[in-house]
Image (cartoon, rainbow, N blue to C red; front, side, top):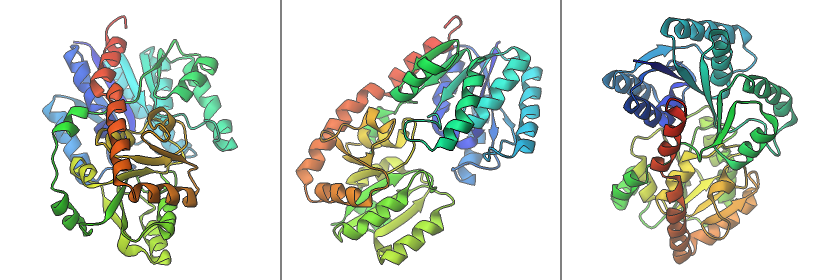
Length: 379
């Protein structure tokens, strides 16, 4: 039986984005291995990471700890990870590897160049993009362009990255696949007791809940939404699902503005289907995204959106049809759009219905059909 390797820097990339790929590969007759850093850097909780290990064992997936380091300047750590990946690739003679994340993608492809292994690389949003800091272009662009020369299939997940890759990258094939997909069926059948869930979260029944989902870090930019609340009606509460290094910064900002009782940091959740059903508006102020699963899930749950006008988001959210697009760091603009939706229940319903219809084209079933073509021998 031929073996393949799913490689990513962090466990959350396997947990949140690659279990469907693993299932598909097994259906195609491959023995699948997974390698990532299970011990550090993940935005999943320790319990979720341990649960992932059990899931992999249950479905007969061998997994390997790779000491990937997210800090790009830690060359000593990158060399250690390179040696670890190279060893398992030599030991297992993979038919191909499918690598993810910038660090995992670079190290995986360098090892594949050494072993002569076929490579599929999914770019979950290039770090260089329109409006990106100059240093991103100086650092990341030359590396990605070089590594593209020994990439058999380069998968991009938004139209901006696809257009750039077609013009600049040297991969054997360049494909556009609309993200990792969203399981629309899961949200169609899920139910939630809004009153009970609000009580659990400590939010009044009559409140308008705006929701963000994502790691608590600078890029996700939750602080802009917190700042916008000073201009938003008092009955609007902000729920943020996720964990990360910016937690105390967000807490302090809410205290500074005197709105702590309206900001709810609820951590990493296993009940997101219910949380989406409890919310009224989805807000997504990131500076950079590839093609956000959280945004797709919100749309599948018939939520109107207020999000940053950035790559990836513009592929999903249609201005004045499913929500509003704002300048990511403009808290006044976010506040204005949130207020508009908070005050108009019919508009929220109209935008939500539009989003639920549009997102059907991003259903995970459609994505898996495209991935099957890539994974199949000769594909």
